[in-house]
Image (cartoon, one colour):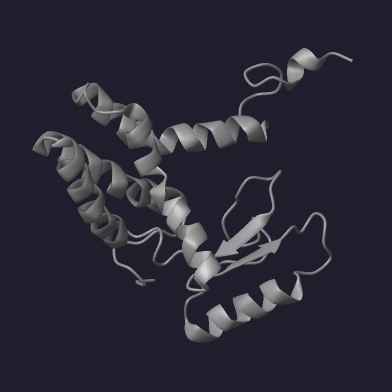
Length: 182
Protein backbone atom coordinates (compact mmCIF):
# COMPACT_ATOMS: atom_id res chain seq x y z
CA UNK A 1 0.00 0.00 0.00
CA UNK A 2 1.36 3.40 -1.01
CA UNK A 3 1.34 5.60 2.11
CA UNK A 4 2.93 8.61 0.38
CA UNK A 5 -0.52 9.79 -0.73
CA UNK A 6 -1.57 10.13 2.91
CA UNK A 7 0.77 13.08 3.48
CA UNK A 8 -0.65 16.58 3.12
CA UNK A 9 0.21 18.20 -0.17
CA UNK A 10 0.14 14.92 -2.08
CA UNK A 11 -2.73 12.95 -3.51
CA UNK A 12 -6.24 14.44 -3.67
CA UNK A 13 -6.72 18.20 -3.97
CA UNK A 14 -6.63 20.34 -0.87
CA UNK A 15 -9.86 20.30 1.08
CA UNK A 16 -10.24 16.56 1.05
CA UNK A 17 -7.56 16.17 3.69
CA UNK A 18 -8.93 17.12 7.12
CA UNK A 19 -5.40 17.36 8.54
CA UNK A 20 -4.56 20.03 5.93
CA UNK A 21 -7.67 22.00 6.83
CA UNK A 22 -6.86 21.78 10.53
CA UNK A 23 -3.32 23.03 9.93
CA UNK A 24 -4.56 25.88 7.74
CA UNK A 25 -7.07 26.92 10.40
CA UNK A 26 -4.39 27.11 13.09
CA UNK A 27 -1.96 28.98 10.85
CA UNK A 28 -4.81 31.32 9.86
CA UNK A 29 -5.36 32.19 13.50
CA UNK A 30 -1.64 32.90 13.85
CA UNK A 31 -1.40 35.34 10.93
CA UNK A 32 -1.68 38.33 13.27
CA UNK A 33 1.06 36.84 15.47
CA UNK A 34 3.38 36.42 12.48
CA UNK A 35 2.71 39.98 11.33
CA UNK A 36 3.27 41.39 14.83
CA UNK A 37 6.53 39.44 15.19
CA UNK A 38 7.73 40.68 11.80
CA UNK A 39 6.99 44.27 12.84
CA UNK A 40 8.42 43.78 16.34
CA UNK A 41 11.42 41.39 16.18
CA UNK A 42 12.02 41.52 19.95
CA UNK A 43 8.57 40.01 20.59
CA UNK A 44 8.39 36.29 21.29
CA UNK A 45 6.57 34.56 18.42
CA UNK A 46 5.66 31.74 20.81
CA UNK A 47 4.01 34.16 23.22
CA UNK A 48 2.14 35.91 20.42
CA UNK A 49 0.86 32.59 18.99
CA UNK A 50 -0.30 31.47 22.44
CA UNK A 51 -2.08 34.79 22.98
CA UNK A 52 -3.85 34.33 19.63
CA UNK A 53 -5.27 31.03 20.90
CA UNK A 54 -6.28 32.33 24.35
CA UNK A 55 -9.98 32.41 23.45
CA UNK A 56 -9.92 28.60 23.10
CA UNK A 57 -8.40 28.24 26.57
CA UNK A 58 -11.02 30.63 27.94
CA UNK A 59 -13.73 28.55 26.22
CA UNK A 60 -12.44 25.43 27.99
CA UNK A 61 -12.51 27.21 31.35
CA UNK A 62 -15.99 28.65 30.79
CA UNK A 63 -17.18 25.20 29.64
CA UNK A 64 -15.93 23.65 32.89
CA UNK A 65 -17.63 26.43 34.87
CA UNK A 66 -20.92 25.87 33.00
CA UNK A 67 -21.04 29.40 31.59
CA UNK A 68 -20.66 28.27 27.97
CA UNK A 69 -22.11 24.97 26.77
CA UNK A 70 -21.36 22.39 24.13
CA UNK A 71 -23.15 19.61 22.23
CA UNK A 72 -22.10 17.15 19.51
CA UNK A 73 -23.89 15.39 16.68
CA UNK A 74 -22.05 13.10 14.26
CA UNK A 75 -24.86 12.64 11.69
CA UNK A 76 -22.79 10.12 9.73
CA UNK A 77 -22.47 7.96 12.86
CA UNK A 78 -25.68 8.59 14.81
CA UNK A 79 -29.27 8.21 13.65
CA UNK A 80 -30.46 11.06 15.90
CA UNK A 81 -28.72 13.75 17.94
CA UNK A 82 -27.80 12.74 21.49
CA UNK A 83 -30.52 13.77 23.95
CA UNK A 84 -28.23 16.34 25.59
CA UNK A 85 -27.48 18.01 22.26
CA UNK A 86 -31.15 18.02 21.23
CA UNK A 87 -32.16 19.50 24.58
CA UNK A 88 -29.46 22.17 24.31
CA UNK A 89 -30.53 23.15 20.78
CA UNK A 90 -34.21 23.29 21.82
CA UNK A 91 -33.29 25.51 24.77
CA UNK A 92 -31.26 27.81 22.50
CA UNK A 93 -34.16 28.02 20.03
CA UNK A 94 -36.59 28.82 22.85
CA UNK A 95 -34.27 31.51 24.26
CA UNK A 96 -33.56 33.04 20.84
CA UNK A 97 -29.88 32.09 20.91
CA UNK A 98 -30.05 29.58 18.02
CA UNK A 99 -29.30 31.23 14.69
CA UNK A 100 -32.21 31.02 12.25
CA UNK A 101 -31.56 28.76 9.27
CA UNK A 102 -29.10 26.50 11.08
CA UNK A 103 -29.84 22.79 11.18
CA UNK A 104 -28.50 19.83 13.07
CA UNK A 105 -26.91 18.37 9.92
CA UNK A 106 -24.21 20.41 8.20
CA UNK A 107 -25.28 21.41 4.70
CA UNK A 108 -29.04 21.17 5.26
CA UNK A 109 -30.02 24.85 5.03
CA UNK A 110 -27.13 25.63 7.35
CA UNK A 111 -23.38 25.93 7.14
CA UNK A 112 -21.44 23.46 5.07
CA UNK A 113 -18.73 22.66 7.65
CA UNK A 114 -16.02 20.11 7.01
CA UNK A 115 -17.49 16.89 5.61
CA UNK A 116 -15.15 14.57 7.49
CA UNK A 117 -15.89 16.07 10.88
CA UNK A 118 -18.97 16.07 13.06
CA UNK A 119 -20.95 19.11 14.04
CA UNK A 120 -20.18 20.78 17.36
CA UNK A 121 -22.78 23.14 18.70
CA UNK A 122 -21.25 25.59 21.14
CA UNK A 123 -22.25 28.73 22.93
CA UNK A 124 -19.14 30.90 22.57
CA UNK A 125 -20.85 34.19 23.33
CA UNK A 126 -18.20 35.12 25.92
CA UNK A 127 -14.93 33.33 25.09
CA UNK A 128 -14.90 34.35 21.42
CA UNK A 129 -15.75 38.01 21.93
CA UNK A 130 -13.49 40.94 21.08
CA UNK A 131 -14.58 42.62 24.32
CA UNK A 132 -13.44 39.76 26.61
CA UNK A 133 -10.12 39.39 24.80
CA UNK A 134 -9.52 43.16 25.11
CA UNK A 135 -10.31 42.92 28.83
CA UNK A 136 -8.00 39.91 29.16
CA UNK A 137 -5.23 41.94 27.54
CA UNK A 138 -5.18 44.46 30.42
CA UNK A 139 -3.79 42.19 33.18
CA UNK A 140 -1.55 40.29 30.75
CA UNK A 141 0.01 43.51 29.43
CA UNK A 142 0.29 44.93 32.97
CA UNK A 143 2.08 41.75 34.10
CA UNK A 144 4.46 41.85 31.12
CA UNK A 145 5.16 45.55 31.72
CA UNK A 146 5.83 45.05 35.44
CA UNK A 147 8.04 42.00 34.93
CA UNK A 148 9.82 42.80 31.63
CA UNK A 149 9.22 46.55 31.11
CA UNK A 150 7.83 45.97 27.62
CA UNK A 151 7.48 48.94 25.30
CA UNK A 152 4.15 50.39 24.19
CA UNK A 153 4.62 48.85 20.72
CA UNK A 154 4.90 45.39 22.27
CA UNK A 155 1.82 46.03 24.43
CA UNK A 156 -0.13 47.17 21.37
CA UNK A 157 1.00 44.07 19.44
CA UNK A 158 -0.21 41.86 22.30
CA UNK A 159 -3.59 43.62 22.34
CA UNK A 160 -4.00 43.30 18.57
CA UNK A 161 -3.07 39.61 18.61
CA UNK A 162 -5.54 38.88 21.42
CA UNK A 163 -8.48 40.58 19.70
CA UNK A 164 -7.56 39.29 16.24
CA UNK A 165 -8.71 35.75 17.01
CA UNK A 166 -12.41 36.57 17.51
CA UNK A 167 -12.22 38.94 14.54
CA UNK A 168 -10.88 36.16 12.29
CA UNK A 169 -13.41 33.71 13.72
CA UNK A 170 -16.28 35.98 12.67
CA UNK A 171 -15.53 34.94 9.10
CA UNK A 172 -15.90 31.23 9.88
CA UNK A 173 -18.33 30.89 12.77
CA UNK A 174 -20.29 32.78 15.39
CA UNK A 175 -17.87 35.07 17.22
CA UNK A 176 -18.94 38.41 18.67
CA UNK A 177 -17.78 41.96 19.30
CA UNK A 178 -19.48 42.15 22.70
CA UNK A 179 -19.75 39.48 25.39
CA UNK A 180 -23.06 37.68 25.39
CA UNK A 181 -24.18 39.55 22.26
CA UNK A 182 -25.83 37.16 19.76
